[in-house]
Image 1: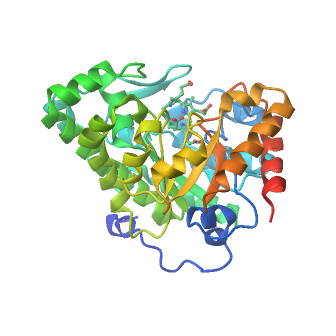
Image 2 (image 1 turned 90 degrees about the horizontal axis):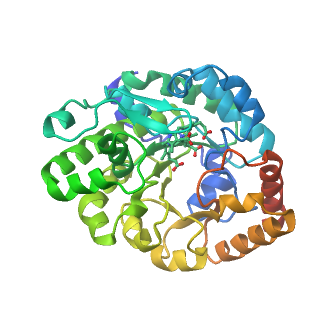
Length: 360
Ligand code: CP3
């Protein structure tokens, strides 16, 4: 695939009725009427599923992301099992960074680990922009999936510049983001060069997925909640806005999500998404006020509550649906990803309950 094809992400040949563009999920993203509240789960494909653990046995995480047939199988598993309203491409946020030449690995039980953390301008300059050909396996996996999913939409995704930068600067997962914040405040020129480069890589990566046929994209700024609103606005928002704004004409809804972002929801909404994801700490009622009336909302059942007895889960699902009903455009999800120990049968039951309780 050529750069021009992926760069021109607009898909004006999409049907206006039928197909994934007319699914409950995409309609809710656009704040159009829906037959039921659509539901999917962040990390729905993953360790909670025995069939996932089986196909992943003996294959490293990054290696798995580069095998289109395996990505196809893992992405479809939760759709078959839970009847969710959308599939999400199986991958990881560090895949495009590895494609850009950064030496990193995903260590089981830890997460992404970077061999040489990024601290200087020379380190930033070694992260090269990516070409669509660098991630041809993603293009291939998306095309396989779109061919098979029929009317079920496929969500593409990427990590937002700040969350990616946190892994690169810290060298791995971090609780306090010490070195990240030290670089941001101590060397703003290096910081902005790093985030600018990551935004460029992320934009190319999402355009490849859109050109290959995904029906929506989600930009994960999972760790943005570590920042004050002032720091978020100064050091992060312009770069996330470059990614989301760069996709404005692409013809697919853009979802933006972070954890612990109660104080940031207003600022995050300014970054240019069509849908804002909310964690479980903020009620959807309160979140809607902060996000504003012109966006759809996604969330926000506490993933830990899936370990409570069913009557508790049922009451919580109904509460989230009632709070979401005040906004045109609610996509039911968890407030963060499915925890690996979750009983998959509970997830299947939650999907059925959301569909039944919200059917109009
Ligand atoms: O979750 C699983 O069990 C599947 C396998 C897996 C993924 N990433 C898939 C993934 C594993 C083991 C990882 C490693 C990883 N990468 C971790 C987990 C460390 C661990 O062992 O518990 C983390 C935290 C990362 C970094 C990362 N990847 C972040 C911060 C995000 C954004 C979403 C989030 O959880 O905040 C990702 C995206 C990611 N990794 C997805 C998947 C399937 C996203 C798509 C989705 O929501 O399904």
